[in-house]
Length: 456
Image (tube, rainbow, N blue to C red):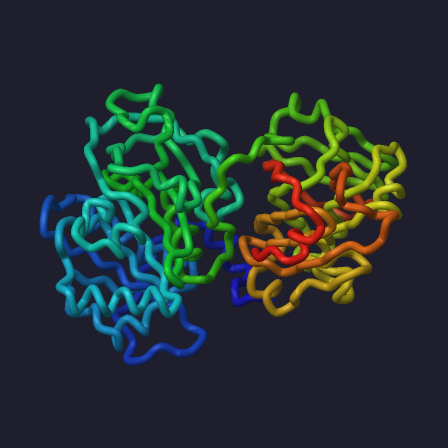
């Protein structure tokens, strides 16, 4: 298992109740201690909410299991000092806050796997530093007056947004950006420009995103202008999840995601093309997920078969041990018998407690996942994970939270992946596994020769 522990779930639930504070910097950092630096220097407009933001991050550290240091001294940006930190939070910084030597130190820190969190005016910072602009994802352009708006949560598996509903109503100062980060970053949430006045991004208005950037991890949120934001429970959970991701304490798929269409989006209407095969069932939950019960059966998508595609879905197990059996089936013929998928398709396993060829990320019974990569990518039981299952020709690749953990080529004619259906398993009476946001992007068909030789 990766170093993320059950404290993540506790932190996300309890973040709003924190009253604690952390002490000053330690002389050295133990190998297993997570430490975050909050940097709030301003060379332009200064936000009155900065003290509240610093206090909130300190309090979140008390619950989230990480130490917090705060500074406005750019002298902290040396290679030696930055090595002490798992993530650096740029809290409403503005203008040119680092000199060239400090910039080089921070670039090296990111390239060695460091984490970046940008809050609000972090996008109004270092306009002439190309590396920073790419890391932040987009630069500030303008903003209308502070007002309520509707935020559409696009990714509900990332720890920064997993506790949110599909729509999030809140008041803040809503930034417009000079460019749209969607093509190079993974958008977590976007603004509904029809819900407020003054938006200028033509209806596609990302407001929170994440990415991997030149070796490091980056999270940005446009919220946090107002002092009240840092007392808002949902916003605090949002910040906590972003910090834990940037610090490497929670895993998520932060690759850009474009061109997918939903097969199940949380509404009962989107289940109309799905059919239950065999015993048991799936229950539609209030949060827009579906949860397995009974079995051994399968809910399969009857609306269409697929050839070359990228299938993405979010899943989590219910039990504390991770011993909840389920899987994702691909490449099987239409049937009301779930055993047709077992015998004529392939299952990507979810249960993390079985032998290697039958555990999380395995092509069940055929090929184990890379267990080292799998363990580092896997979030603990009760937390959401994201699978990408990519099928091209007879090649099947599995990505867990953005990390490739399996690469398998079928040679069995009875299980050809070239054209088939997809389904999710409900395994037994004691197995509870939830799924949500099942989406697909169809890919161009490739010849067998090209499929076998292509890269990631």
